[in-house]
Length: 152
Image (tube, rainbow, N blue to C red):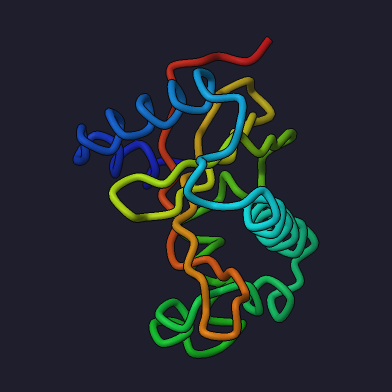
């Protein structure tokens, strides 16, 4: 958590992007017209399945949803899981997670995920998605930032 707060302090632009994505998600109940609904369904399935695998501690299953660039940086499921445990604890520790409407921003496919922590703190995870040559969607990156929203 401490690393997440420090990262947010260094990246004010990231907070602006989180606010923008949250506004887009609230203002647009329908998915981005640039992608068919079937793509958004698959993207949401991939993000949800990876988070479920992370919560279950299933490194191999979580790693299977990572794009080649992530796999190059973390060449084994164990290395990937260690990175998640160190830098993305909110993904594992959240008591509640909700997929929000995705958006295509500057050509990047972004799938937001609202995370509510046990103490009511809210984070937003912004997943950058990448379509592979075989048509499958994979996670190419994730930024987690605190939200100004507070859970009840």
